[in-house]
Length: 407
Image 1 (cartoon, rainbow, N blue to C red):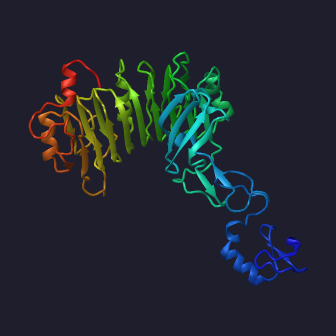
Image 2: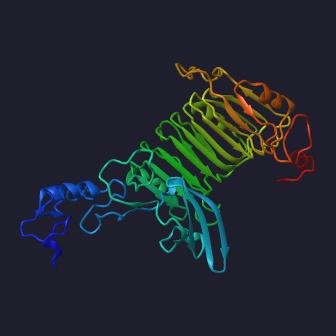
Image 3: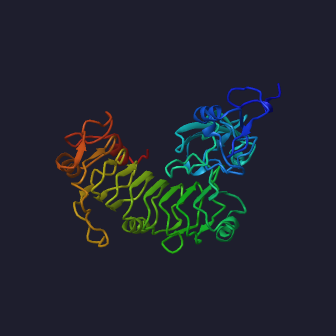
C-alpha cells in the first residue's frame, strides 16, 4: 500500500486526504483523526517549515523532525573531569556533566587527542540530551542545549591569536571555555585581557596563563567563573560586581593574594564559593546572597571572616592550619563594604552547617562553633584520625606539619 495516500492516524487509504496546515508533513482523512493524533503524538512533532530547534539549533526538516532526533553533546563548560588513565592502548578521561547529571568516559590515542574528532565516548551517556525537537524556548536553568554563543579554545600554538580574535570574530560570546586536554604545558603562557561585554560564563582549565584580567570595563557581565591549575605567578585581576558563582581548584600559595581579597570585596552578589586546595592564609566574605562556602583542603588558611546572612553551608574539611586560627561571623556588613546594605525584609539570618571533618581547629574556633546561635556543628563528625573534639588533641595533620612532611 502506498502510505502517502493513507491517513497518518488511522491508516485508512483515501484520495481526499488533507495536510496539516501548519507543517504540511502529515495527512488525515477526517478532522476527528487530526484531533486525536494532535493529542497523542503530532503536537510534539508539528513545526512550521524551516523551524529551528531551540535545543539542538538544527533546522527541523522531513529527515529529522520525529521524536528522538534531537541530540545535544555535553557542553564543555559544564564538564568536570573525575579521572584519567593512560596505557599502551591509549588514554581515557572520565567526566561528570553538571548539565544532565550523567557521567561518561572518552577514549583517544593520547591525552592531546582528546579534543579531536577521533576521541570517542566508550562508556556512559553519549549525549547530554536525546529526545524531541522543540520550538519552545528552553528554560534558562536547563543547560542541556547547544549554544551558538559558546566558544571552546584549546591550548596550542594558535591560542593567543584565537583569544585576541574573539572581540572581532565572536563579539557576542556568552560562554567561553579555554582548556588543556593534554599534559600541563608551561611553554604556552597566554594572556587573557580582552573586551567581552556579553560574556557571562568563563572556564579556565589547566592553562598556564601569564595574565588574566577581568573587570567591569572588559567583562562586566560575568556571573560564573571557574579556574583550575592557574599558575601561582599568574598576574590575576578579578573585579566582577555581578559575580555569583566562583570556583578555584589547585592554586597557591601565590606571591601575592591581594587580588582575591579585592575580588571578594567587589563581589557583593556572590552566592557560591567553591574551592579545593586553595592555599591562601586569610579570607573575608561579605555578601547578602552567599549560601555556600567550600574551602576543602585550604591548607594555609588561618583566619576566616564571614558576613553572609543567607549562608547555609560552610565546609572546612581538611583545613589543618586552623589550630592557631580565628573564625569571625559578622552580623552586619563590614566597614570596608559601604556599598553593602543589610538585607531588608529578608527575615532573620539563616542557620548554617559547618563541616570540620579532618580539620585542625583552635580552641577559640571550637568555642565559636559551639556557641554561635546560627551555627550547626557536630563536633563528633570528624574521622578517628583528625579534628578537634572537645579538648586539644593530636591530629594527623598537626603531627605531619610538625614533622615537616606534606599530605
